[in-house]
Image 1 (cartoon, rainbow, N blue to C red):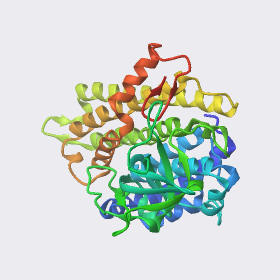
Image 2 (cartoon, one colour):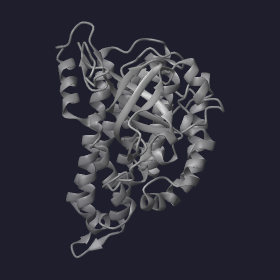
Image 3 (cartoon, rainbow, N blue to C red):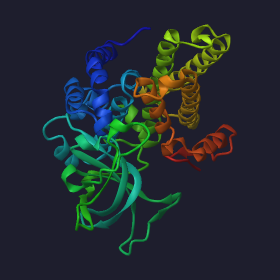
Image 4 (tube, rainbow, N blue to C red):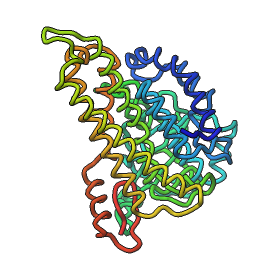
Length: 399
């Protein structure tokens, strides 16, 4: 594989960190968020900000460069890959879309900032002079334990609290505010992705609303960045699909790698497990299904990346395939992980990497981006049933 020099440098940084990531995985799982030393290593390596625009001091990495990094990190520990993806995507969007005044505030000391939160609107933003008063309770703030800035989605309301409607539904805004403006609710007791620390959060006790300046916000469906490389033009609709695809690639590979380790060593009353013709057949099928799904993902994102680097607009079909291969990849890995779990028998019951990746992929399948309704929209686009100027939003097609 021919690798661009910059991409090779990022992958070398990942390789330097992987032993620490593997070593600290157990401690992170036990405490419910990443360990301080792993986060510090990720920050000092520049991997947490590799997709931030060069205009704010970030790495301005291409989509495929980032995909390979997140894939490798997720293979080592799914929660580290997930938090790396989140910090890059939310920080990149903030850096690309908020006003210059907001940029000066957030990046006053350089690009090394951490950000987390939930862009899915679970709160409300009431317009006031100079910005918005926000309120609500938000969930799934992955990486929020170490975050310095919070990324929060809100429905825009009028002064009476009624949602403001646009042509295609409620208007949504993404707001950004300092970590000390929220309270963590400490409720991350879950099946998988335990070390992401994806706690719910809300405003501090006794505070009904929080003022967020307009210069620290952007609209949910914005696709015209104020700064950054051409990949920023994908907006949340495309970049969210990209991030979760990258993550799943690494977890899927680890499932099969762990199963091979367990099976090769195991002998039970029925004989050597790896000698079973039935198992060999099913394992080969699982390997083929994973590799085919991975090939579709890279085919899709290599084409999108090449088009972005030329400054070309992404056609509806490109984002449709990005959305479709995201769900397809998760479906395949979910099935493969279930096969691996059953074939491994007791090995997947204990606190082993095999058990961990089994739990992690089935946590990833619960994300709202995997909703059947999004795949239905993919079908609509593939059938040519959309309008002439149709375009993707995060959750569906407009037009």
